[in-house]
Image (cartoon, rainbow, N blue to C red):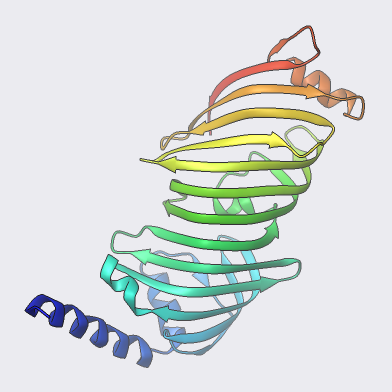
Length: 248
């Protein structure tokens, strides 16, 4: 092994010893100092391996969180952890990391959360969804509430929108593929009352472009169908072509 190899191993071991001795509550206090809005009512263990109860991030609540430090993540300039979150009707497990420049990374993330948490996590409250999000993400990178990179799939089950337009969508699937701060989300319905096939593109500055087709079925709410017709061009087969741009 060359000298830099020994140095790398030594640094990893040194950081591992530090993490093993730092109480979990001090770790949460340090995150607050750097502006990370993550709090816990009660903690046990250390930063290496521990548990938190009453965990909250941007108003999103989980009853329990368990973590274990990943020392090899230091090779990529990150503080990484195996993480499990649980709460009423919610559970997530995967890998979480914080980078040197304040970026957050989630990988191999699977589980289910309430759809209501999404606007809080992204700091966007214009749309109020309801239902469950079935999550299977290979990678998600965030900074300042913006998604920088993403790869994976999310199914929105028992999908409903409370505002701005009340709607029952039954089920939707989102295929996420984003890099260089531009996120493209492929959207299609899961045999719900409205046929949906399209793409949503999100830019770093909050601009979005929604493009695709929707087709209300006889089971669709009439007021929702009329609202959709006002958003695009109605075709001969009853489908509606939508090409809409805006700012979040």
